[in-house]
Image 1: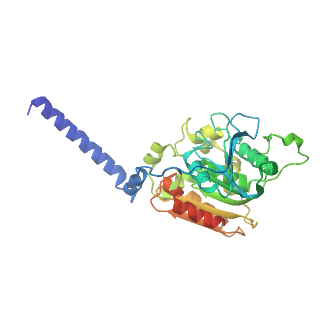
Image 2: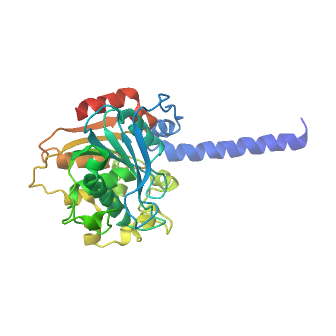
Image 3: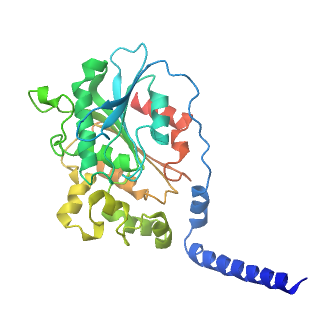
Length: 340
């Protein structure tokens, strides 16, 4: 063997050994972390529906003129008179995705034959910080309520779905008073005599981020190490100027006052002395390293004795964040049964 090649092979082996030792020192102290990492490297396998849609599609409806971003897509089923309304709010860390995101598409392709399905866009953080996205969602809900007869659906007992960041927005819209964050006018609102209220009857929260201040402690409780959450950009212990929280709220979680933390936390708005006429479906993945699954468990624990309707919490084993398997035919069929 040539000397140069021999040296190269020895160097490669030494580097590989150092890498292996380093990875081992990071992974071994954390029980189950190797499995979680493997779950997060699983390739996506779901495909969209190939069936042609027979209903009516309205794309890019401008629900508010405050921004060109404020549009929604509406899917009206064929041969159903006055169908119930389902509203979809996409995720994407408040900084990307839109009304036709992968997860939203799985939802509307499955449910648009039975529901009037509206999939929303809203101002992302790079355009406007909190509470802009919340205001936009509420404006869209009022627009959809006001224009129900125009399109032909039932605006009472709305089902609202959100995933990840969308879960935050859906939960905030459900538990904050209708008038709060009601400053963004919907198209046609000037013709109304009174404030338009919306009626949410079912909340579907898919792995939503709900309490930013609790994230570090929840990751610790789940034995998810800081180096991994830092790599994912979800470590709120070490917020950078470019962190999602800084981009969305305009300030770091660690620098917020107690009052501000309470304001941005939708769970702090749940009145423990109130019984809500609401159905709630919550689901999360056990291998989620983007949003700790204890966020969903906490929401369930707070609400389980405070709703008059049905409430379900499902922790899906080995599912990662935004896992395609949440939207499998079997899982969506189960969700449809819950809704009925």
